[in-house]
Amino acid sequence: MVYDSMLIFAVLFFASAIAIAFHHGEAIVSNLLFKFYLLFVLFTYYAYFWHKSGQTLGMRAWKIRIETEQGGNPGWGTCYLRLVFALLSLSCLGLGYLWRLIKPYTWHDRLSHTRVVLLRSAREKPDTGTGAK
Image 1 (cartoon, rainbow, N blue to C red):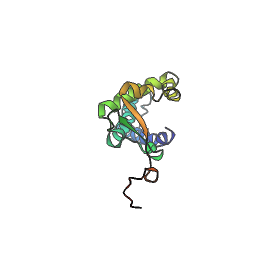
Image 2: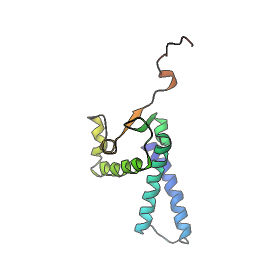
Image 3: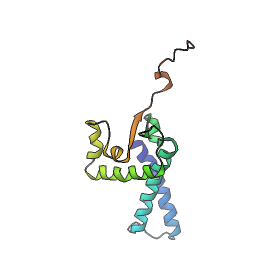
């Protein structure tokens, strides 16, 4: 989350610059529509990467990915649903995330039928028995 937050800061900064340019430099921070616009940009950032590869750039660094219960990348609807449930997990003082310490899933993974998996590197994969080294 820390790695992605740095990228998200840059994305939201750029999105804000675009919005301010269209409002001729006027302050729009208190505008409710502007806040929903930034939330949409944030959701789209995550949904795009999860739908495309199952990983955001920060998740790639930690070698983890999101996948459906069937093992594939989540669809757009599942990605957005997972994000809504992640907000619920955060709004309960992060309890939905902390749940992972006692169960093998977070609240938002359980509710959106997704899971976080650890990827193994090529060096860690078991020998296939072909004899080639």
